[in-house]
Length: 185
Length: 185
Image (cartoon, chains in turn cyan, yellow):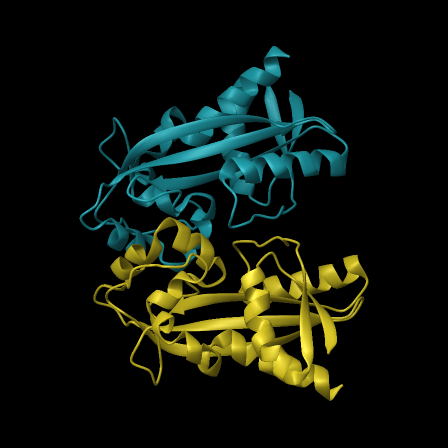
């Protein structure tokens, strides 16, 4: 197993990524550190900047990841600030914002891979779908959008088909691209 | 005039603060630098951390300021991420979120004052009011919420009573507290 440092405060992200990565002979090892976000930046900019800074700081190869939900009816929302938006207006707020609007949405996950003093390389996964009109009761804290997002080609929200999540999730798609790149080198 | 370094990327903030500060014999000088925000932090935490970091980095007394709009119907929203929320869902999104809800809202502005290697001191101003049900057309980019916020005790949105803004604005109240503190030392 090749081990690679994954800079993130989220154990959940590491676990989810490793379910895919192990199929490629890779193991992501958590380095628990919080890098700054900024309300003017896209997910790609956040990841790019964090990967470069952390690779230089730790003087070794790192990966970082950021992901968000994007509503087709709005621009870049909640996107990079999905966690904040869930914590403040929650699914109820999302439903209000979508009344009478296009309910299309997608998840985007972006991995940044960076060697010290080099340019970061980004790997993006996108999972399209629809927002429901009613939320299932939340049972976990970690992935609240899983309760209101129906991936394209399925008829249930993600939380009801968790055992299939790695077939369609944005994170899984991005991890695969990252792993294929690492193995091709 | 006593001059004090104000770390901010916004010329508008400096101008608005100086209209008050000059009455106290103070002049805020802009140091154009962007400090990190973070979606897990309150306005107070952002200001506190930025003031301390910038005072140490520049090795001199600095002030920083952060402000946001808070809707009574939600918790901490849009608050520290007001700029992002305006840029993504805008006034239209705010109106949707408030349909059938309490339209009470307040602005909060927090100044952080910090000497190198000391604890920051915070000064908070709050301006309460109501969100309108219709937006006036936007004419300026800088202060979009001024077009939908009616301060308590007034009958018009802020943008229509700009010449009175320093009598009620959260920023004016916070600057006054900051200036009184500086002059008392």
